Image (cartoon, rainbow, N blue to C red):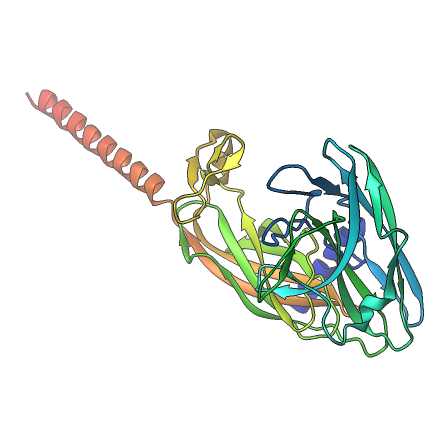
Length: 364
């Protein structure tokens, strides 16, 4: 991709990102169910008995400060149950778990002095049914602090049970809000490398095409790369644009993370099978797909060789840096082509028979 074209696309991305406030470093808000599953919408926690039902605010919070400063954040939790609950706040840390962006929640370990920086306006409190409770978290950052610190602030019953494992600690029936704190210092390093950019197949009959990018954060501060995949066919440039990492998921220091994006703008289209509002999976846990024929979208029939150019942008603390990737793939709707060929052959045979019969009549 030519330098001028890259710069033009970076400017387009910057305009789009400014509208979405991407210049602020993203925070992910999460729910921790049994087993520690991580989600980003409005979150809740519920015990097996169904007695505890908590909801935390989905509003993203990002904390950026300087060494020797104090920074605060408002935490909100709602009791969505039917009786008053006595809750307590807990503090854990998190790191990267595998490459799908799931956090690994861990208890305080030796040397984790940054736990001592945090205090709350209340450590335990009562919450009535359907009541929102606001708690202030204050972090007193020492002068020798630097780079990133990653907290998991938990809400649970005052009498809680925990289950421990070799990889992480899960709090039964609790929500966890993940907080990313950046302490800005001159020697902060932000550097992202593309380890792999690919599609899930080389050949497709119909869309969707799933793109996967594996990134490595070689720096010492979390970053949130974001951008687009520009899909072209021959001289037809950028006939489709697929957004990558719209949730502003963060890439933690010295870790890898895989992001996915799907190109679904096609006819016909494989879509997940839905029953009773839920996606259906087979016995192996894979999604079950149905082929949908929306004939109002026939102009979106995809065929031929396509090229996907990925352009992501992240802030290195001084300027926007671009990272790129490129992959090619084929879309061959063989059933449509095969059916069209059969129809054409039948029409040709019928025309030949008609002409032959007509010639016989003329020749008599």
